[in-house]
Length: 136
Ligand SMILES: [Zn+2]
Image (cartoon, rainbow, N blue to C red; front, top):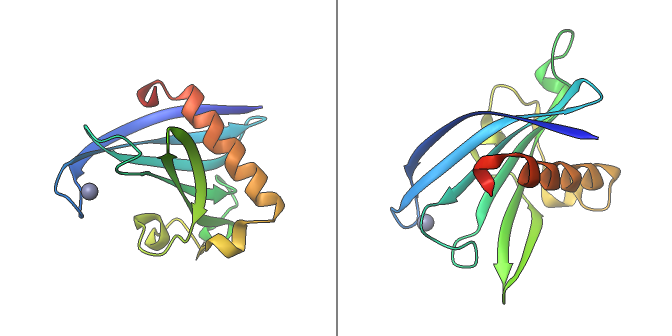
């Protein structure tokens, strides 16, 4: 059972089109332990069909006794194709999470797909989309 704790948010401008973007973030807990922090960034006024949303995770162990080497950056995109929404793991390269001081490694799609981590990452995505009221 994943529990989502929304925290802060900010706005900015998209690198590709200059439209306003919004970013919201927070933590995901499982059985009382933090398992990830998440950052969702989308372009205001654009559908995810035209402009996929970024969903970045800092995934791993948090808190006392942990270091950045216990955590990895994982990136997903949330898109829509012919009216059907989807989510896909992408390379973390070029995402801000990849160079965060909080992570020891930045994972590629290849590192994640087909591993047990992929299941957990998709479960975290689903929990955030349902439980963070800023994303509905
Ligand atoms: Zn753009």
